[in-house]
Image 1 (cartoon, rainbow, N blue to C red):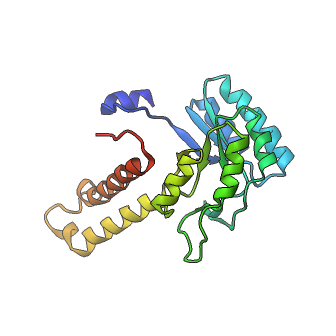
Image 2 (tube, rainbow, N blue to C red):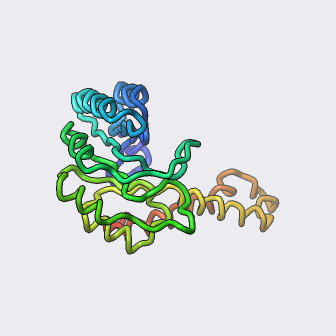
Length: 221
């Protein structure tokens, strides 16, 4: 990671993070030197999730690697698995936080992928309960599609990290489609991947800059 940062002249902090990894994936990424891993054991019996989270924390912290865990299912589609999600249980969240994890993803009505038209919004009452009982920074997955006002309210109530992916993918696809439908890939060397993919890459950049402003993060120039 550090070699890439240096070669590309990147001046902001960069980590290599495993998202939604199972037990074996988390262990492997710790072994090869990731700077951050997420062990997602929400689909395991709670006691097993708790014990494996403890193990991952011990392995990771021995190498100064940060750990994110999850409690309460986050709905939507993730790697082909579709779920409705559930609200995180406050007592279970406290137990997972007590393992020493650096970040904790909790289900508060958020989902992965596109939000359906009948989505009722984030459950701020549960977020307040969690934040009142847990000092561990909380993570909001499924940040794509949540209205700006709700995201900013969640941050004000204790969310420290917001995951955004689907919006970037949709923006990339729309920009690439526009480029091809305009026939630009057939003009000169417009088929060159560096030209073909440039509008999509710029679209992702634009979304990220907008979200940086939403989240109150110092802007990257």
